[in-house]
Length: 260
Image 1 (cartoon, helix red, strand yellow):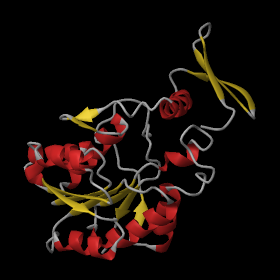
Image 2 (cartoon, one colour):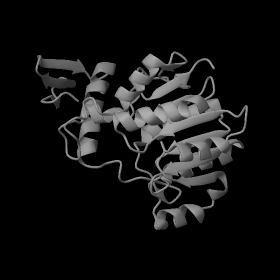
Image 3 (cartoon, one colour):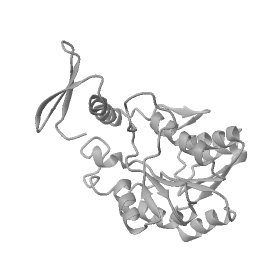
Image 4 (cartoon, helix red, strand yellow):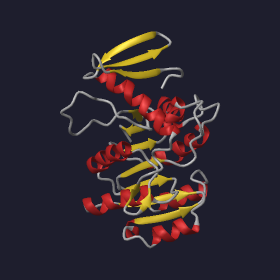
């Protein structure tokens, strides 16, 4: 959301009123533009209020925007990966989410990598009914030894999808993209999460360099240097509405591998 932008609802004529540096704009409620303006304000407010710190999946905290997880589910169901690699474990909710999809689909397993898997989180994950689908690896996701462990768990010809949700600095995400990009199979994705950092610079819990030091910058640079990948929004498999864009913490996140 642009710094200084204000959004209100004009109850008299049913429009969204956007006030920014370009002056006042009135957008009809039933337009994608109005939905986009309200969504940007909602995302920023959600960041400030830690809205995403209120969800769980099958008993484990999952610090994610629900729409991001539902959209990711659509991709996973279409790609049907044999292996889902996720960097960043935290409480394990996302790992459990992915594992439950593997169980529902009848295919796939999950590899979770984190520089520190705290004992109480490890115990909760290892005692969970979805753990049979999960392998945990502790260590930096860009450590060559850790990368080698992950690669050794992937068999030739398996379909792989990778989700990057650990350290979100540009350099770290770039390192992850370089390390795990080769694992991604054509038609599948490597997903660089939390590029919303660029849009919330100046907000609570943000950094002064987040306008460039973020996963989206890393993803765009990676795509520019790797023609086998393109940043491509996954299509909605069902949509009877007029909204065509995700409401997301992960803008420009989906790097699709188009060739070997």
